[in-house]
Length: 428
Image (cartoon, rainbow, N blue to C red; front, side, top):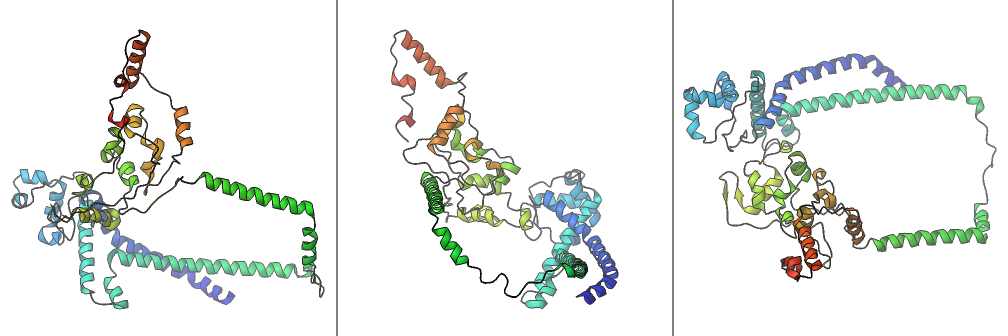
């Protein structure tokens, strides 16, 4: 081990310098395409895909069909080119009714980086086609280009450098241990033959078992532990706090309600007008996802989760038409109350002004929804004890005050005046 580490110490420095230079060259080669990928995903994926037609045309080989100078001007301000009467721009306008947006914030170098990214994607697709049918090492070699090859080089460099570091550290540890052992050799005591053997552990255990007080306290502790565990288990029967079932679609509230700031009641419209908050239909999803189909996680391609919505609606994203083989999405209910418990969303959301997070927790941070609150009777009662009633400008309490005034005057007060005609009083 020591001889190996000495060899590595001699060659580590030149090899490290060479690897750093290799990494720098690789980074410089991939810089434009990497920057272009980031800009493309931030600005272009809502209308364009590279290999297939979307709202706008497919961008594959676009750098061969048009001059780079013209593409830079077109991406920078397409409406201005159409207004100026550019012949190519006027030819493209009727082919694609959706107007090309202007991107004045992009510099010429950034637009060229986008074109470099498109070219790199085309090269990757061409390499993948050429390697179709090849397996093993041949297939891996044919497909290793662009970002994949850079990633492999970086990974290899990291593994080699880590191996060097581990070997050097282990070498120093071995030398240190050898010095410590050599300097303390005389301090290690000699163990007499047979010493420490044959101890009567079984006899000690028998002696402890005959101690009645010790046995009594041990049994008492076990009984208390089992009793408290059993009580806690029985007390939590029917309480599903933390329940997080697997849903048919991985809908992220963190993305929609958190990152994109979509109001809860846009999807759950029943929360402010009925007892149930309601589960949104797939048509509500399609208000956005007819256009938003891609995700950064899937390199601008159709997200598998959005594809599930399309399958449920029998929707073809290429033709943007619905079929007849539609079926419901079978969501799994998370928040369940007993049948004898009555809870009205509109009464809490509209009248009391309760926020969704009061019961459902930080829903805007949940990638997968789970039951945040215990939803027990005690939990509800504690909330009712702490929540102050805002009666000013509240029609319900204004109605009660008016009824009380009539009672003071000896006038007739009917059940209808106290909300007795509301459907929810009897039908729920």
